[in-house]
Length: 528
Image (tube, one colour):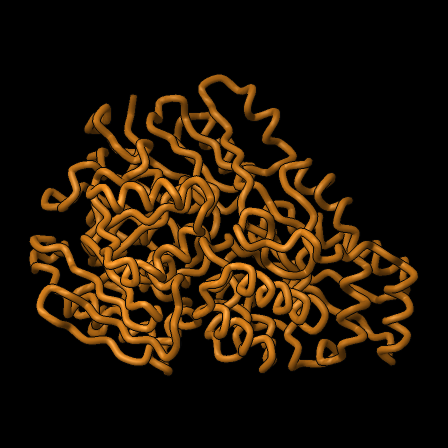
């Protein structure tokens, strides 16, 4: 690494310049954001890793309707599975640094409108074909197509053009975005042969493990891909993912040795489980949050007064205490917390108020018919109990909330993004632009609250190109307040990610971005 780049990175790390601003200015400094092994966080190096064995995961969040199309990954089991067979061009490390994957380097123009990614050579897909820059470009074209059903569409729709220039993929945006490299680390954007245009759910990628068999909602089996390009990843001979949606059964499977790691440990048993022999409980605070979502284009949730009544009727601290057992913090009806660098701590906290809830409910003119909230235990740990607490406090304010409990299987296909009021969760994202763009921009494919607000859209899009971090923070603060007051999302709590692993697993790295090391447990750990 040259001296100029070393000095600049030292300046960045001491807080002199935000890393996102740094990325947007690399061209202005005449530098390329070349990411080599010298920039890898030490925790990602695996010199001590041992090879061998089959690691088994017991995961919540799978169902019989599951597909291998990464664009449709919308629940924990599927989100983790795409990490087995796929790679993105960059990766966000636990400390939010960017790590090179299928791109060796990248460079942004001074205005952050044009980005050039140099694609790694000699990388093979599981079908034996060699990955090319055109495969990368085709992947992005598929996810950014206006007819795409991809969960990444909200972050990709700002792309104007994607071209290939030799070993480079050149992305031209409609307007500048200094966060683009972070966005391309999204787990939906696994690079596929021909972009997945022909067969998006083939499960063929460049990842460390090759798909052997797939039983939707039950079991995924992988074997180590012998031709994987990165010797520092994928230390197991194989991976078996078992879908175990029942919380008690999942915990028992870990304790009995049936599996080596589980996600979504019930916070109410986490402390007890941590004392069990041979088990380690890993709790990491981060941007993940549990939500109740109202579709604002369907009655009675098209009534702002009714939405406000429900937002004031939820006792957030009670939920953190009773549902999370303290493994989290209260939310404020927008999806950002202090884990984001541009979080505004001065924004007022919405407090539980039966009086205000009753006032807004009366002002709504609602006819008193049951307001149905759909929930399954698999929506988030403790979701059914959380809904019961919500129902009890709402009824104290005279709001006729009724909990409709439904099965876990089919929840993410038939309830979430379908029913007008349901429980859900978001794992959070590396940057605010991504967290706002995926579910809240008007044209986002996963706009599960049907929130459409031009002022909000304009603020998010303008913030992408703003390199002055003070101005950018103010834009995000304004957007947060619009969503908080006008939107259909109720964010009662931000959850710690609570996983549990066998003591036989070595190489664990705390990663706040998503459960099980942001889905990289099988790539980065090994058997001791």
